[in-house]
Length: 157
Image (cartoon, rainbow, N blue to C red; front, side):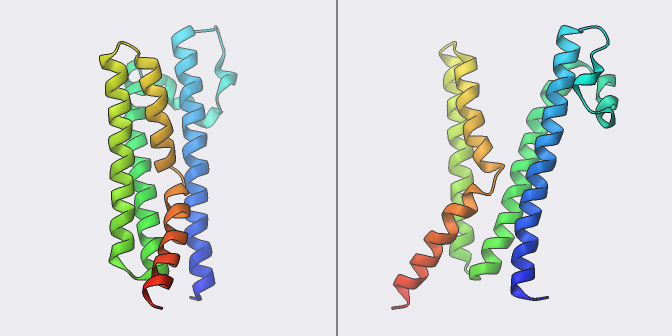
């Protein structure tokens, strides 16, 4: 398989994962809205393929979103780890990807915990979602690819 085809495959894997994540969470949020407000027969809010989610309680769906988020964070880390290693074949670049992921996860936890401790859970949640949103996107790769490229260029001169 050619190098360009493999790169395209990695990019498509990230895009497809991102679209699937978005579709899943939009529909889960619509089901949660339906369950919380019970606006009659408002099942038009979510796609019929997600109707099975109505069998779960509000609390179960709400809590499962946390675990699904962590699953998508892990999936994006894994795809990006393989992509970075494929591009540069350097463990140092993969190490920095891991450090970036751990740092953003830590910031998300600190944001949420601070909001909880200060009695402003909504604001803490908002900031933690920003950090986890970065982790569920190609942004870490978009940061590390040029940095690694310039690092390698500078060290090999």
